[in-house]
Image (cartoon, rainbow, N blue to C red; front, side):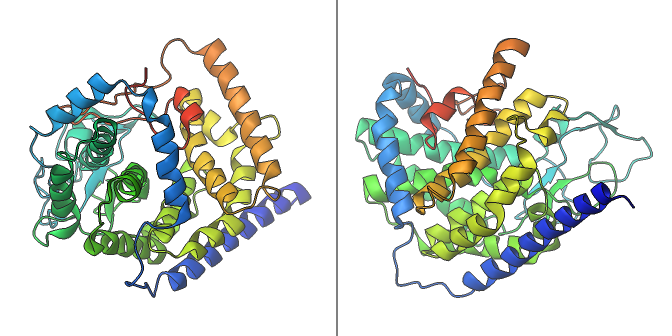
Length: 392
């Protein structure tokens, strides 16, 4: 074995050991939650709410209010209302399929097929999306986010009742709530597999966290402890399950999104040690793995849509950097900021010179077809960490 190969193996092993240690530490921190303290009261969420308030004038009021009013006419989202036979799996369990597989026969995706599926990186199969809970979860978070912005923009609380009921259906009611795990997320279709490794589907919850922060600090809304309890149970599952371990060990954007989600859940229940632990043990290493000295993102540039995925990958890194700055790690993180700035500069050149039109289809609207609410545009980086639909 030559030295370079050994060194690479050693570095990879060291990084995985760090991630294994942070997983164990975070699990211990979340083992004892103080129910007497207010949830979502951390200064990070207060700051986030202020940043939204400062940016909300960019939003076109008429479009936002029209969309919010239209949402009030739509039925509540319910995870138990599946679009396929779940083959004896509890309908309260989240089910989705690895999106880039295609099969000409479109057989039941949970059954093993003799027809081999084709893998097409970055090209989602709408047949699978229609039978997944992923669009529903994305739309749940997007709708609540949009309704909260409308409430603040219009100084009107009529949307809060809808939000309260939707949160109750998805997170509280024992008959309709989503079970707090993703054992069946991104199952490989037509393979006969009955489990997946797709916790990245939960990244949409970041929009929900933004909305709850605004509800609390700008609308005086009291978050039910059952909603927060669900989030803590979900975090504990990530930190103790094989699916969670596999996702945390991912060196690309998938691992970064889990880091962000766990940080947010820790802050929501006043366990800032979770965020501190992850930032200290994981953030620097993830940046080194994902951005080279030239500002390129080698793990994403291998993809079928390399520029799109490079843009998408910026978001969890920006979230982690934002948290790092909030925890007064500015001096310690100056090299991190330089790496991110280099990446953004190179990304801009790639967008400008090599791709025409939109980088991704971005739909801020909530449709009957449950289109994904896709906030990851280059423009949105200028508003970061706020996601602002219908900007002027």
